[in-house]
Amino acid sequence: MDSYDKREEYAIVLDFLLSGKSSSSKSEPITQLIGEDMFTLLEAVPKPNISLKSGERVYIGKNERDKIELIKRRINYNELTQTAKNELMNSVISIVKSHEQKFVEMFNTAGPLNIREHSLTLLSGIGKKHLDDLLKQRSEKKFESFKDLEERAKLTQDPARIIAERIVRELEGNERFYLFVKPMFKREY
Image (cartoon, rainbow, N blue to C red; front, top):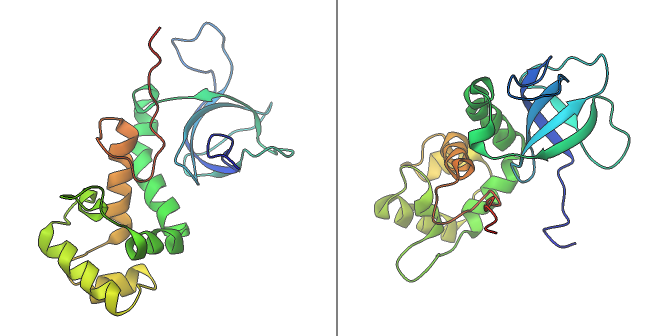
């Protein structure tokens, strides 16, 4: 399956606006979501008489949905409400922790971006010294968990937060390289 055809199955609610956005001409409930697989920011319409809470996990796949009527569109970081922006970091940390093996594997397989830069150095707090330690440790034995990563690569504290910080920066859309998020480019006409 082409990565462009891949869709989110589950998402976390960032904000729920019972009467929609004030800037909208149509007064309908709106929810802002972040997808669990690709960190896609979405705006959706909940089913009638459904109330959603920030941090709630909802099904948004192709089959029958219990709480979401329709996905309106993909949105960018700047279109998030202030409440959604405030909720974003905690939601991303939650997603990263619930998909721990996927992100541990990233530490085990990440490679260079170019001749001078390694992809792991894009994560906050990982400089040359940290990188050398991480590469040495993983060459001796692959990392098995975040706890294992913290214990063996002493310089790496709270890997879930480090990854979440990078994901949020990528969602903001000003990065040169993207490790976790498919960037949203503006179309030029």
